[in-house]
Length: 156
Image 1: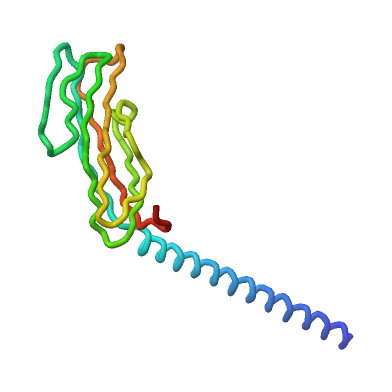
Image 2: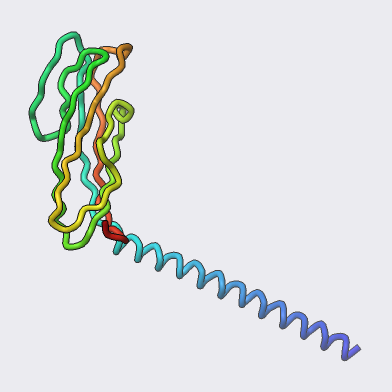
């Protein structure tokens, strides 16, 4: 009986050690995930700029040259309008530029170039084109242009 209870006691110790080892491993994984996320966010993420955009679908053509937002003016159904923006990179490291459109205009606006790297001091002109279909209803349409600037992991 003594030998049998000793074996059971030994098995219990082994189980407790396995549980402790598993808990320690799990804590290490969680801690390393948190640290990795922090490092990626801290050193890769840089800046986000959000601009409004709008257009009006109507019978007559309208022009809006204000520069406070991406105003595409008044368009007839089936018409299009362009706006250009020059992006100048003023950080001291290469950045990846990602451009997104959101809102009800997201499907109406295309971008000439996206997901590109700019070196320090480099500039690039990007064209935004708003196209409305012939069946597009009259009215005002709005949305946002979102520029994301992230530290580029690789140049060029």
